[in-house]
Amino acid sequence: MELAIQAMIGFLSGFIGGLLGIGGSVLIIPAFVYYISRTTGYTGSEQHLLQAAAMIVNSFVAAPSVIAHCRAQAITRSVVVYLIPTAMIGVLFGVAISNCSMFAKQNGA
Image 1 (tube, rainbow, N blue to C red):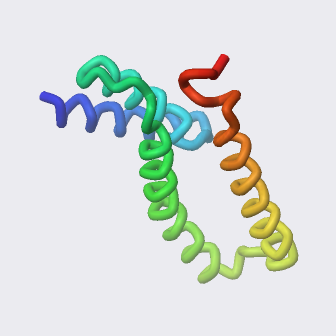
Image 2 (image 1 turned 180 degrees about the horizontal axis):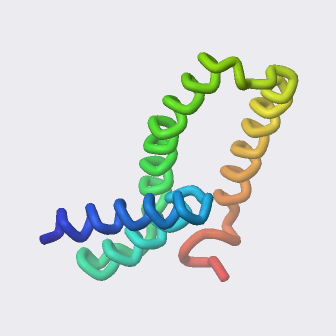
Image 3 (image 1 turned 90 degrees about the horizontal axis):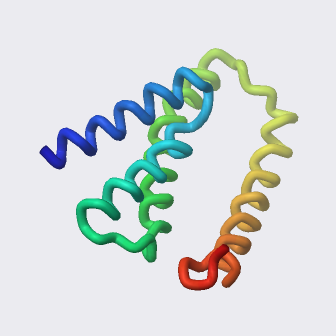
Protein backbone atom coordinates (compact mmCIF):
# COMPACT_ATOMS: atom_id res chain seq x y z
CA MET A 1 0.00 0.00 0.00
CA GLU A 2 2.83 2.36 0.83
CA LEU A 3 4.37 1.89 -2.60
CA ALA A 4 1.03 2.66 -4.26
CA ILE A 5 0.68 5.89 -2.26
CA GLN A 6 4.23 6.94 -3.11
CA ALA A 7 3.70 6.14 -6.78
CA MET A 8 0.46 8.14 -6.78
CA ILE A 9 2.22 11.14 -5.22
CA GLY A 10 4.90 10.94 -7.90
CA PHE A 11 2.41 10.49 -10.74
CA LEU A 12 0.13 13.32 -9.64
CA SER A 13 3.04 15.67 -9.01
CA GLY A 14 4.46 15.00 -12.46
CA PHE A 15 1.06 15.18 -14.16
CA ILE A 16 -0.10 18.38 -12.46
CA GLY A 17 3.37 19.93 -12.71
CA GLY A 18 3.40 19.19 -16.44
CA LEU A 19 -0.07 20.61 -16.97
CA LEU A 20 0.72 23.79 -15.07
CA GLY A 21 4.18 24.19 -16.57
CA ILE A 22 5.91 24.08 -13.21
CA GLY A 23 8.44 21.61 -11.94
CA GLY A 24 7.02 18.53 -10.27
CA SER A 25 9.41 19.15 -7.36
CA VAL A 26 7.28 22.12 -6.34
CA LEU A 27 4.56 19.60 -5.52
CA ILE A 28 6.41 16.38 -4.76
CA ILE A 29 8.66 17.67 -1.97
CA PRO A 30 5.83 19.07 0.20
CA ALA A 31 3.68 16.01 -0.58
CA PHE A 32 6.40 13.60 0.52
CA VAL A 33 7.22 15.66 3.62
CA TYR A 34 3.54 15.50 4.59
CA TYR A 35 3.26 11.79 3.78
CA ILE A 36 6.47 10.79 5.56
CA SER A 37 5.64 12.91 8.61
CA ARG A 38 2.27 11.14 8.91
CA THR A 39 3.62 7.62 8.44
CA THR A 40 7.01 7.64 10.18
CA GLY A 41 7.05 10.56 12.59
CA TYR A 42 9.46 12.51 10.34
CA THR A 43 10.15 15.96 11.76
CA GLY A 44 11.60 17.67 8.70
CA SER A 45 15.17 17.53 9.95
CA GLU A 46 16.45 15.91 6.74
CA GLN A 47 14.40 17.63 4.06
CA HIS A 48 17.61 18.31 2.16
CA LEU A 49 17.66 14.62 1.22
CA LEU A 50 14.27 14.97 -0.47
CA GLN A 51 15.47 18.08 -2.27
CA ALA A 52 18.65 16.33 -3.41
CA ALA A 53 16.63 13.38 -4.72
CA ALA A 54 14.35 15.78 -6.59
CA MET A 55 17.35 17.50 -8.20
CA ILE A 56 18.77 14.15 -9.31
CA VAL A 57 15.45 13.23 -10.89
CA ASN A 58 15.29 16.65 -12.57
CA SER A 59 18.67 15.99 -14.18
CA PHE A 60 17.42 12.75 -15.72
CA VAL A 61 14.23 14.43 -16.90
CA ALA A 62 16.07 17.37 -18.48
CA ALA A 63 18.82 15.35 -20.19
CA PRO A 64 16.68 13.98 -23.06
CA SER A 65 15.37 17.49 -23.77
CA VAL A 66 18.88 18.89 -23.94
CA ILE A 67 19.94 16.10 -26.30
CA ALA A 68 16.91 16.64 -28.55
CA HIS A 69 17.47 20.40 -28.66
CA CYS A 70 21.16 19.92 -29.49
CA ARG A 71 20.31 17.55 -32.34
CA ALA A 72 17.75 20.02 -33.69
CA GLN A 73 20.30 22.85 -33.34
CA ALA A 74 17.71 24.76 -31.32
CA ILE A 75 20.06 26.04 -28.63
CA THR A 76 21.16 29.66 -28.71
CA ARG A 77 24.74 29.43 -27.51
CA SER A 78 25.00 33.12 -26.59
CA VAL A 79 22.17 32.60 -24.09
CA VAL A 80 23.67 29.40 -22.66
CA VAL A 81 27.00 31.16 -22.06
CA TYR A 82 25.25 33.50 -19.60
CA LEU A 83 22.56 31.12 -18.37
CA ILE A 84 24.76 28.36 -16.93
CA PRO A 85 27.08 30.57 -14.82
CA THR A 86 24.20 32.67 -13.46
CA ALA A 87 22.22 29.51 -12.67
CA MET A 88 25.19 28.13 -10.75
CA ILE A 89 25.49 31.39 -8.81
CA GLY A 90 21.78 31.19 -8.05
CA VAL A 91 22.16 27.61 -6.79
CA LEU A 92 25.06 28.54 -4.52
CA PHE A 93 23.19 31.59 -3.23
CA GLY A 94 20.06 29.52 -2.56
CA VAL A 95 22.05 26.89 -0.68
CA ALA A 96 23.81 29.56 1.38
CA ILE A 97 20.49 31.20 2.27
CA SER A 98 18.87 27.86 3.13
CA ASN A 99 21.73 27.09 5.52
CA CYS A 100 21.05 30.26 7.55
CA SER A 101 19.73 29.74 11.05
CA MET A 102 16.60 31.69 10.10
CA PHE A 103 15.45 28.72 8.01
CA ALA A 104 16.41 26.00 10.48
CA LYS A 105 13.51 23.87 11.76
CA GLN A 106 14.12 24.79 15.39
CA ASN A 107 14.55 28.52 14.81
CA GLY A 108 12.49 29.01 11.65
CA ALA A 109 9.54 31.31 11.37
